Length: 226
Length: 293
Image 1 (cartoon, rainbow over the protein chains, first blue to last red):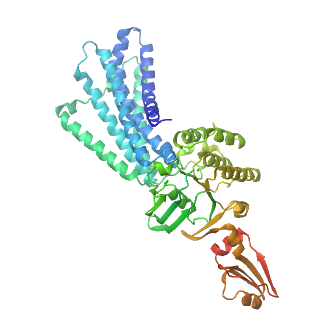
Image 2: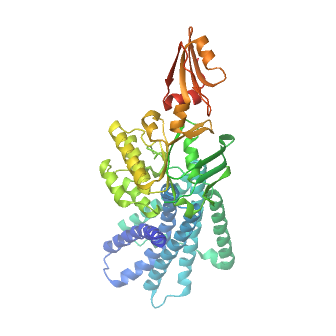
């Protein structure tokens, strides 16, 4: 399999994990409601699907990073793939996965608010993308640190945080579905970022780069175990 | 087939403050089967993992021909170290299935021979759907052998390939290895504890002892140069005077000692002493097992 195809396969895996979960919850919400029409689908696309996808993906993407770095990436090195390629493939997967999730989320916002969709509506999606990059970066660093030191508690931080978010989200929304309510109550608020967006963006980029740098520093001489 | 030589120069490996490999120099030539023999903890797996760039060295360099091996895909496509796969849950890859390993090998090993891998999987009755954590030690060894042989890498290293295998599977492995070697002329380095069984395969043996290479020699020549001398203590002492002696054993007035003859040196059979050839295992024990009582 070519390198590009392998990267796309990983991105596809990232997408369907989060997407699948949110689609199931939205479908349940749609079926439970009495309005089975396009208007209801559009309402759900804005109120539940777009933010739900970003919240869930912010938790599932780190889990995917952990699972890859701890199980598959050592095997690739074992089979002669260089650490440099492992690292850059992973950066690309992180970027593309977050990008496509943001794209799907953005598309659902536009679909739901059409023709009144504005750039401001997409602000949440953009900051969602930044959030996904940050949590992936943190997990990558923690996972490599765990592989380096073999201290389980380091990996547990990322796993527990991610599982907590997924569990909380699913629990909240299941309750919402049972009570026939939308789960708009946990829409992400990025309003505080809008006061100094450039500053926040630069800060986020710097943090991502720094985490990438330290991840590489640890990965480049990593002992592998299979 | 690459005709390049794999060279290790000044390899040092440390775990924390403990140095486990001490300034190792090693040359592996193409078209040979090497036996890497050492006691537990001698550093065999560590050495092989460094030679294949799976793990880093603290210092030193590994080159294939003139090219450094570390992080070099061009060189790494010629080298594969099929290390022992961990059977327990401690390794994170233990949740993977046999088929995952085979699929990854197909994707990442540039010379992967899928047909051969399928044939070997059938031969060893490996269940593709089984997770590696549920495989027995023998089955894990078989998986490791499949990966090694089907990798078609010019330099293939196997770490304890027969551990856990029953006698039939071991014979199958030795036959397959010889067939592959005869057909392709690939270089194999096999680390093993079952020395006598595999001794006939090794063109050269490398004895690794406490992180140092104690010996690297043609197996046949080594065995020709090693003789066990026994008899009455005074007569044995007289016969072996000035020779390189190992593993002396005294029992009452009798004495036994292994003599390693230097190039051109001979040992005369005199009255009262017995000269016996020694096998590779005995040579290893004599050289690496410490002095006998």
